[in-house]
Length: 164
Image 1: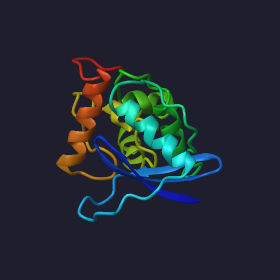
Image 2: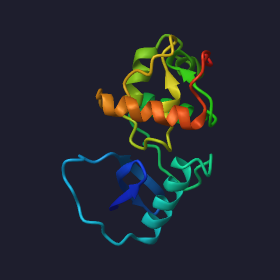
Image 3: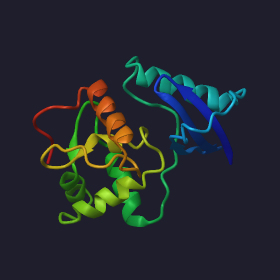
């Protein structure tokens, strides 16, 4: 397994990957500065792809990533979320229905709170029925909610109605 820190227009991102693809993407603690290191070939490709995506130059991410198999429910949720097209927003209840668990909206939210590969598994495209952003990734901070809002605006996904 390899670990690298890449830098995007929106800030640094820590990445782990192996020969199969990306295993995790996470926002590092911004209070701990780290010197820029030379990237591997894969790290360079990831940095370039994320830069193009976050600038709006591309709408489809192509690098391989690995969705964990366990817990099984989480894995089903993460797979379902990868089907949400760029620019669309689905609700937690829509995801619950998609995986055959129509009353499991809260459990869907919990699974998305543990998404290991943010952006590639686009949990930012999932909102409440009321359109509330909810809690983005595994943090409740305003900073993370702001990131979700920015991603939705960039993708054109903030609107008055959502797929439910």
